[in-house]
Length: 266
Ligand SMILES: O=C(O)C(=O)[C@@H](O)CO
Ligand SMILES: [Mg+2]
Image (tube, rainbow, N blue to C red; front, side, top):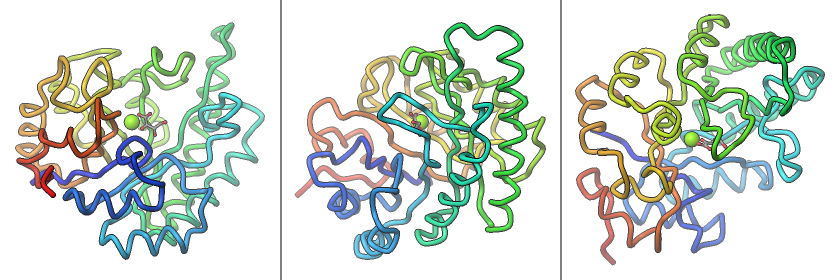
């Protein structure tokens, strides 16, 4: 049975952030994810989870200066100390929220990056992820990496699935896994079913959205019923994060998920 998690950065934005947990539970979600918890005390977030009766399934490491356009630190040469602090801070929140996995965003390549700069980012990325996986293993948690499409995030270092698989192999840690966002994969590469099958053993988390507008999964060019069935047939027992921008209201758009326990009633 597919387990759906609500991405509270994108869904239920009709409510204040702390009210989104209950709104998600009321709509039938049993798990939640969001970009960053760091504006809130972990104990406050833990209470919101407890009161709503939902599990925290994923959040991201501190990404650097998000407002200034930074999109993660993991591949940035010269920022290793900050990355290590980000790992420790994320694991502190993961402990308080009982969250099994955290996503380490890679960061951006300079626009004029040559082969040398790219190789330097790659070496930094592998070394940083090795550190992150080691710390997370001590805490019994996973670290995830996610290829993100370069139309939405120009310059993002990790944009292709094969690139992510090569990084996982280079680091070689059991608890470093793939965050497979089918929306990003469709934008960059397509061939979703085959990517899913090939990468299945490496997958730690899945995310979905319609393509190309990143609206509900039943809007656009991707046929999610077939993909979710394939996922079930493969024996996936993780979460599927609903990381999309509702075309109208969150609740009005949940009809696609009725077969998976979501509700649009009351
Ligand atoms: O943008 C996405 O897709 C994500 O999953 C985020 O964690 C990265 O910003
Ligand atoms: Mg995603």
